[in-house]
Image (tube, rainbow, N blue to C red; front, side, top):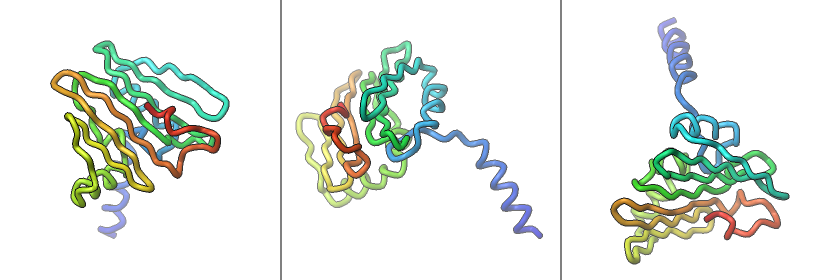
Length: 150
């Protein structure tokens, strides 16, 4: 009985938590990012994918690239501060952390780059300016170049 009450309480609490749009997650959660960033969401629909561009009043821009299947296959950012990578990368944050632990990264002129078969991450910047992108090659739609995620 205690376990049932605990599980029910856990379910109710977790249902109220925000679902952030992130690499590998579904498009519907982009709205949570828009609300959290207090930003405008301009959607561009192209032949083989969509781009949600979230722009805040302070100039932060986050682009989320969505496949026809409704999954976020790439994210890109430009901001005056380092964005929350947990929010942008979702479960792929583990890929970034694993690459850092395994030293399979390149650091060059304030840039961090990770390039594995299932995850690509580039982030560079200086105080007051950060820019980067990340994508999952397996999620990119057919006939879409990886260069669109920038």
